[in-house]
Amino acid sequence: MELVSKLKEREENGNPISVGVVGCGQMGSGLAHTIGNIKGMKISAIADVDPEKGISTLEQMGYKRGNIVVTDSPSAAEDAINNNKPVVTADPFMMAELDGLEANVEATGVPDVGAKFAYQSIMNKKPVIMLNAEADITVGVYLNSLARKMGSLYTVASGDEPGVCKMLFEQATLMGFEVVTLGKGKNNVIDYYATVESCREEAESKDMNPKMLASFKDGTKTMVEMAAVSNATGLVPDVAGMHGPKVELEDLSKVFIPKADGGIFSGKGRVDFSTGAIAPGVFAIVYSEDERIQKDMKFITKEDGPYYLHFRPYHLCDIETPQSIAEAVLLNEVTVTAETMHSEVVCKAKRDMKPGEILGGIGGTDWHGHIMTYADSSAAGAVPIGIGQGGKVISPIKKGDVITKDKVALNRGSFVYKLRELQDSLIGDGK
Image 1: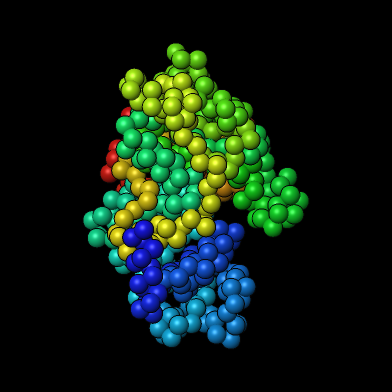
Image 2 (image 1 turned 135 degrees about the vertical axis):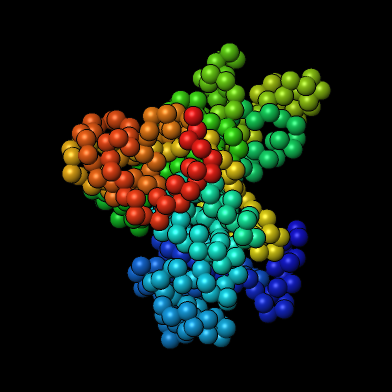
């Protein structure tokens, strides 16, 4: 593999790819450990609001505390990297400017931080790899366009569902199949009203952030992941919120197909998910009416067709992200990007809210994410999840309602809001 040989060459030359990671939670710390096991790549800087998380991660990787440089000074950070000492900082935006870093991975999951950091990395012509799908589905189209204009690189990471689904999509397309469905397994039925408190005990037992677990349980993460798939491929949800039936492996190609052929969809080209026992797998349902191909597929797979299942039984999240880093730095290639918006994830109320209340963020008590087509979201005036936090309620909102812009004064001062305005002017309102 070309990447492996190129990494080997970098290692032999004593010049491993120097990587920065923004956000040292479950994903960021796992990525740091993964990079530490790859010859030809090294972790050079970690940013987190709690620097101790970065220090602890590096110590677990074998670094001595005395050799870790904790600083918010760009010059001190550059000196440390040049002297082969890892940097920990509370200031992520400093890392967008450091010459000693060849690429940065954004892993905070916070839309405003992710948008601002990606923008600054792009403006400094430094590749940025997003493990922050929440920011990507909000302003990724604009950031991708900006990166190309600037001669930089912006991409969503491999390993998470969008990256693996895009891989299945491209493989199927290159085999001449029509992709009918791209989907993922979700390991539990959605609890739309999950909160930090309802998830706290389970989260602590799994060493997880309760807010992150709440965003998984209330369906927001699934909606975000499949919206990223939609925007990268053009496939769309069949209905708002997707169907999400419980379907096991042997029945995927019978259910996730058009109604005319016995399935659940109004047509082809859909994204969806199953709560069957296929998690953490991802899948593609593909179609061919070519009789010769059907004959070959019957011989190879024992399936009758014309619908066929392509299934990958896992996605390895941050453990697979180094492939995107290597592709970006060594080949100047992206993993997942979007040219326009096909789907939007909007805020849907978890509770009744009255004027004067301030909307919280992802995994909170106020709303969960709900996927819609971009056209339907725009027509409804729905609030995208990436710009919902900090909005002030100006008209009563009922539990279960999609939150619309006429009922909330959005936080126009946030960086992600400003980028979203630029993106909307770039691609239009979807109507």
